[in-house]
Amino acid sequence: MDPRSEVLLRQADLFQGRLMLAGLPADDLLGKLPHAQGWCWHAGDQAALEARFAGRSHFGVQVPQQPFDGAVLFLPKSRDLASYLLNALASQLQGRELFLVGEKRAGIEGAAKQLHAFGKPRKLDSARHCQLWQVTVENAPAAVALESLAQRYELALNDGPLTVVSLPGVFSHGRLDRGTALLLEHLQQLPKGHLLDFGCGAGVLGAAVKRQYPASQLTLLDVDAFAVASSRLTLAANGLEGEVICGDGIDAAPRYLDAILSNPPFHTGVHTDYRASETMLQKSAEHLKKGGELRLVANSFLRYQPLIEATMGNCELRAEGQGFRIYRATRG
Image (cartoon, rainbow, N blue to C red; front, side, top):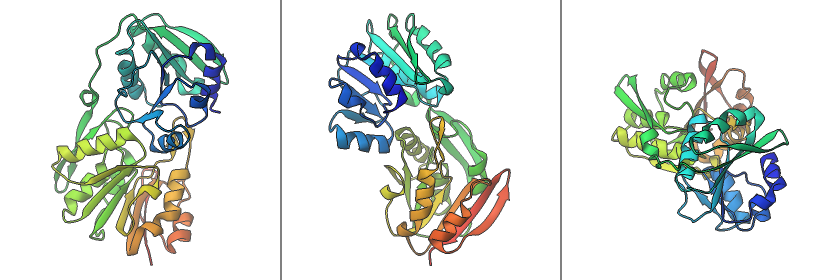
């Protein structure tokens, strides 16, 4: 059981009505709170919750169209995303209860200050290195449209400016990260055909390669619904077409690809997690045609080269700089 869920269950008498659990972990909490519903934007967690509690967890970037009398937000890593989610929930809870739960090292005390906009918050519990806060919503805000919170910026590429649109919570929100910037400089001589941007985030790589290789078929894949929404906005802003998939890891990707491009993620919340990236490296050959190529950027300290060589039988270091490396491998 997630420690945040354990803290909630210490106050279980408060959570017996129609409750919306936003950003809930994929544990047994829904089983302990039979009248609660979930709202999830992580495809892996959603799949696990749906398998155990069919129909009780709703997936997407908008508040589910499901009646609820109170809500709990499990504090996300991103402060911008937390602000959007608190606004979205509080806008529907005039006179009712909004709870916020999170780990101390994730910044729950600072995040709880945002509750002052709705009423007078109070701390209900502190245990398992977590805190639980509550506010009666006396000043329900007007709901803010998610797209109005998008940040746009332009990249000066060789074939002209590229507009990037990112939403709260998406990796490198509102700016280009150094790893992707390095990979953008090394997209020459990619195979033609079906290209995958794995862990697409705001769709920077996918949009750039579609512009550079317009005849290629493009698929973008991310586990996060906010990233998928961002990628769609980025493609639309540049008049580009591509299939955008929300799925949990490389298993959700198409087969018979000509190339996989990635700045693979290795963080989940405040915890370091390499599993999605390592699984992608281990299974990449299964998704590539013979002669297909894997090209990615990674932090220099990550020992990805042996993993790539074990899977593909080869791995070439194409470039290095600012703490990152570009790797290239082909399926034999």
